Image (cartoon, rainbow, N blue to C red):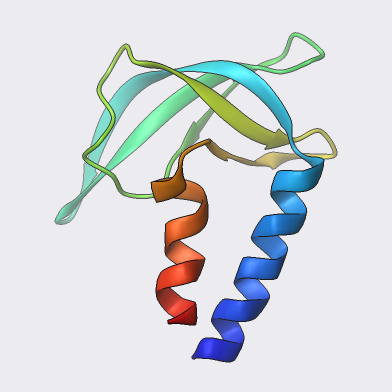
Length: 95
């Protein structure tokens, strides 16, 4: 398990180092089973508006403004810039 977490942590560090940062906003909170997933919108450097689900979190509120990390080469790779959403998942698995 720790080996998989180490790989995940390395990939996360790589993503963060190459990611663009854009202003974003939580536009919805969607329940999925026992979890709630913030849905955020961002406008990238090419003025494309994108929406995406975050990992489960009760920390964020609809209307909240935040910073979004996103890969300019992969429109599907984006996330809310926070310790809880970026670093905590791979660190939890790494042990």
